[in-house]
Image 1: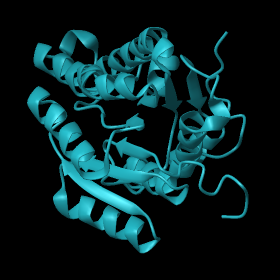
Image 2: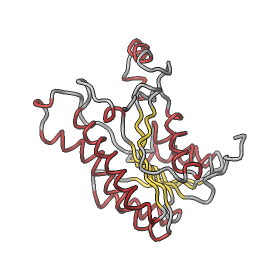
Image 3: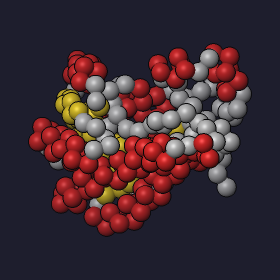
Image 4: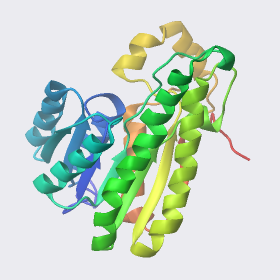
Length: 258
């Protein structure tokens, strides 16, 4: 830490879902490094405990709140537990999500597979925002960042179509929240990462394919979790105080919208 933004989130409570590993874990640690008290969500209690030890070891404040994002009552409960532990939520990073099925032709998909992707990504994000918004409105401030994907911004024949459709819904939902909540002092924005190399994706994507993917990006490398975390930090902090309703591609120039 070397500049005046070191503690820009001092005094704020951030809830980061899907924070037990990967991108979410790095986002949580990065916000804590910049002064936020952080509630980290996931389903793996041991992994969440490790995240909190890491944050607390660096001098931060962390609380683990486990829960299943496909269960309405558990979402409301984890928000209550986060607020009971660290106070009202000032920053929400709705990072949890993913594709529960592999890419496949749409006519071969089962109804339950399509519904599962929508529930895990779009409906869970909606329920989480619903649980957090009343407190933000009461306090007259708040910043929400949702998680989309390049799959929603640049679909291909090989995209997991249910996941892509759900993430496109997240983008539109975020814009609607920005319009409705703005008069209450609340901003809502969305980040849309492209290929991000985490421990999991590094194992899933062969090195040769990673090298091929690099060539598809004007900025000749693949993304890292800190690329996403830096974008989230900007969107939840005061430097973006007049930015709301945007979808920010974290894609090395690979996603160019007209």
